[in-house]
Each structure stands twice: as C-alpha cells, then as structure tokens.
Length: 396
Image 1: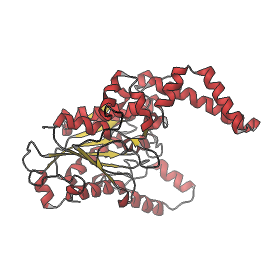
Image 2 (image 1 turned 180 degrees about the horizontal axis):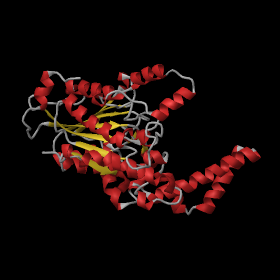
Image 3 (image 1 turned 180 degrees about the vertical axis):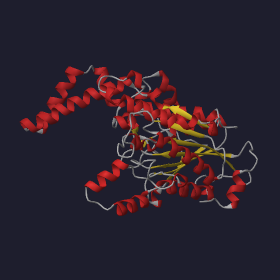
Image 4 (image 1 turned 60 degrees about the horizontal axis):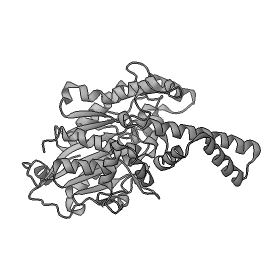
C-alpha cells in the first residue's frame, strides 16, 4: 500500500514551527483503553498521577477538551464507527460506557512538548495477535508448527483447509490499520479543520501497545517460558516496524513499543503470580528486543509499562475476586436470594476491607487485570510515558 504523491510531498516538507505533528497509536485492547472515567478520581490519591489528572480537568471539574490536539479513532471494522474530534475523555474502547486509553495523557503531554497542533490516529482492536491479525506482509504467511499439525491430524481435519482459513485471516488488521491511516492523511481537514496544507505535516511517531494474545498463545509459541520461546514474536515485530515505515514512506519513523506489564515487575510477583513469572519475563524481553537491535538503534524505544502497575490496587482487586468466587460457590450450594447475596457481599467486605480500601477499590478498578484493572491511574501514566519516550526521539 502506498500513499499518493501529494501526501508524500506534504509529509516530507521541511519541518516548520506551525507544521502539524501526527502520531499513530496502534494495538489491541489495552491501546483501546478500558479505564472507565469513574476511575479518574483515584488518580488524585497519588502524587504521581494527581498532576496528570489536573491536565484532564478544568478548574470547575469538567473534562478538558484539547484545543490543539485532534484524534481519529477506530476499534471496529465498520467505517461509520470512526470517532473523531478534539481530544477529550471518551476515546477509549467504544461501547455503552465512557472510557479512556493511553491516548488522552499521550496527546496532552506530547502537545506540551512539541508546542504545535497534534493529530492522533488511533487504530486498535481487542483480542488481536501480531502472529496472525497484525501480521506484516514481509513476515510471510503464518506457518503452523509440528505440534499444531499433529493436533490437526488427530482431530481428522483438513490441513489444507485450515491453512487456507488461516491465510484469509493473516494480516487483516495490519491492512485495516494502514488503510485507515492513509484515509486520514488524504483528507486531514476532515478531522482537523484548521489544517494548513501549505505548512504540511510531520509524521512524527508510532506507538505500539499490544501483546496479550501472543503471550498467552501456547499453540503458536509451544516453547513459551523457555529461552527463545518467543523469538518469533521478536522476528515478526521487526518485520512490522520495517513494513510500517515502508508503507507510510517514513524510513526512520520513531517507534515506541509499549511492553506488556500486567502484574508489575516480575521480580516482585507474589505467590499467586509465580507460576507465570518465566512466561511474562521472557515475553517482555522478546517485546523489548527490537529496541536493542543495531538496525533500529536510536529510533525504536521500549517503554516498560510494568513500572506503572498499581500493586496495592491489584491486591485489593484479587481479594475482592476471591470473595466473589466464594459467593458464587455459595449461590450454587445454598441457592441464595439476591438479597442474601448482597448481604453476604457487604458483610464480607466489611470484615475483609477497611473503609479506605473499599473506597480505593470502588474508585480505582473498572475492569480485569489483563486490562490494567481498567485503571485510569495506570493507563494514564503509561500514556504519559509514551509521550516522554517519543519526545526524546522526535526532532521538534
């Protein structure tokens, strides 16, 4: 896929002080963002995130609407589901509730750093892998390993048909991503009405935040948890970086890898997490590896999102989940009425949590651990970290 000549000309125009800065954000569900806006208040409880919260809100408590940051976001396959406008809350995962992802803090802080108009192009879809869904063209077709072939044969299925089905899925979301980026670049005024074509734009960075579906895929990575078990992820990500730069015609496009960090630093894992330690450590190293390659020195950087994990919030969430598991068991055994279930839960909470802990839990968590607890505090610090990282690479 190629961008038409006028776009290439505009993108390569000499950088001017009023030139539009464009950043691409791509990945799966954590790039979408599953932090409900009710968790914003929790940010104010920690000095590390309180200052970020201040940038999200006006003095009267209403949500900030950025005057110099615009966004186009898609997270479905339907063109009509595109959301665009000035950056504010609500550009997280689409649905019935209002959510944020890393885009809010990223956009606000990167605009402060560059001091120019900013356009974000966000393409993210939940539950998508790099090995298949985002597979870049130069990586070639998905290749089944011997264990997969053995399983297919044992189930009496057609290897040819399964390979055909796999080929149809392979790279689908890579191409949807490129297609949407090109669509926005061909008509920037549709998103950012004040865009000046004479000044042009500078495609300034690409943020990649993905990984969960690959990390948990034992079929594709049968040796996960062993040295080299995720080498193929590294190899495919290398191809991804090259192909994005080729297809967008920006050879040294600054590239940020948001390294999966659910659970926090592996060396601090508790008893319940120990069994995943080797898998998580090895996958994070494989995600980070392109940033260490001589080929990408200076223009690819890994951001360790584990640094922003909230261990206190995670521990509270784990305790609450255990209570809910007990309630589920009792509901089956004793057939509790809804009123009895509510009473059980409230009594258990009163015995197991302090009032401060209950407030923190109810304010800070809105989703599962694999979605960084649906925590605005966590996801916003990650977004700011992406902005901090790209600022060290961007010649603004």
